[in-house]
Image (cartoon, rainbow, N blue to C red; front, side, top):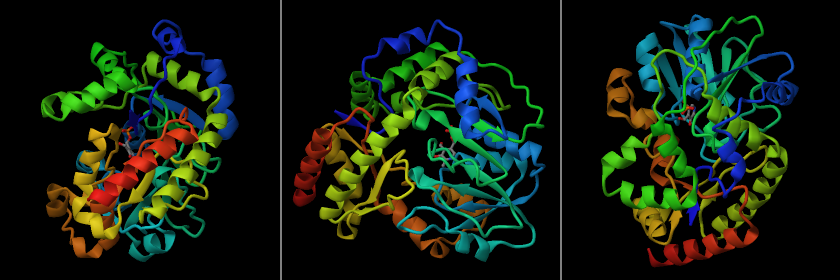
Amino acid sequence: MFFVHPQIKLNSKVFSSFFKKPNLNYLKKKLYSYFPDKQIVFTDMGRTAFKIIIEKLNLRNSKIIFPAYICDIFYPIFKTYNIKPIFVDIDLQTFNASQDKILSVATPEAKAVLISHTYGLINNIDKIRNLTIIEDCAHSFGFKKAGKLGAVSFFSLYKQFPSLRGGMLVCPKDWKIKLPKTSFSFRDFISLLNSFPLFAFMFKSFGSRTPRLAENFIREEKTIKPAGINNVSLNIFSQFLEDFEKQLEKRKKLALLFQKELEKLGFRTQVSENNVFCYVSALIPKRLEEKRDTFVNKLKKQRIFCTRIWHTPIIINPKVQEEYNINLNEFPNTVEASKRIINLPLQNYYTEKDIRIMSKIIEKTVKKL
Ligand SMILES: Cc1ncc(COP(=O)(O)O)c(C=O)c1O
């Protein structure tokens, strides 16, 4: 069984996460070596950190440049803070909005830009001067430059660590931030089971037949107001951080091998240099565009559980289209990516054999489509 979201191989350390206090000294030492001049604040989720940024930078009622290809969790935040997004199309080989494209949509009223390192591929920006840069590192923990290009940045820990929850704000040292604590609830515990292959299999197999069940396992913010991370998630993050760099090197090698196999089958893969591969993402061959979802379902039956992040990026949401007057013709690459994108499973503990098994199954499935 192969899953995209971080999985835990049976590991007794995870159970101790329920009982101990987080080792803050270790975390500080390790993380401040990445960000020596900044302050690090752990939040319940990545979006919480983004909300804090909006408040601290006084970006309420302002215009912010946003990649059109991003999740729609930002939509309610736009509404809360009365933000008017200026969307920018992406490039298909990076899935990022290039700085030239960003500069081409920048107007004098735009106060800031959100730079996303989509799927873990760093979006290098060095020409953007007049805008405050907010770096969305939700997918890019571990790349040395990630979080250092902008004025402020935020991470979503549970994308790359099996911590269930957790965001991280990296901001100036003089920001005064006090967050209420959150606890790890029974519901969180049930969701954490999704990090174990057997439970993930059950959720994915039966969850789709009873949509409420699947819905119930989607992470939600604990409170609408910004809140802190819970101790269990922080402990799990801390444990997996210990050998993160080593794991990352392994992950990159496997991702490169997977990309090669996919390219042979006509998939279009993402640029691999400067990529930490939070997701191994590719565009299904153009001729199979209409069959992308059938392909995903056929793989599911063979126990390869892919995701389609984002088959519905923010600009595809009808409410967003209406509210911000979106003309999809202005975003051809975002629309194309939404139709063809597929994220393939990769876990740090996989071996080359796992990649070859998946590649073979994918090859056979593609041929039968
Ligand atoms: C690019 C990107 N930014 C921000 C977020 C928000 O992160 P979180 O789910 O931790 O709030 C997500 C995920 O939902 C994301 O994919």
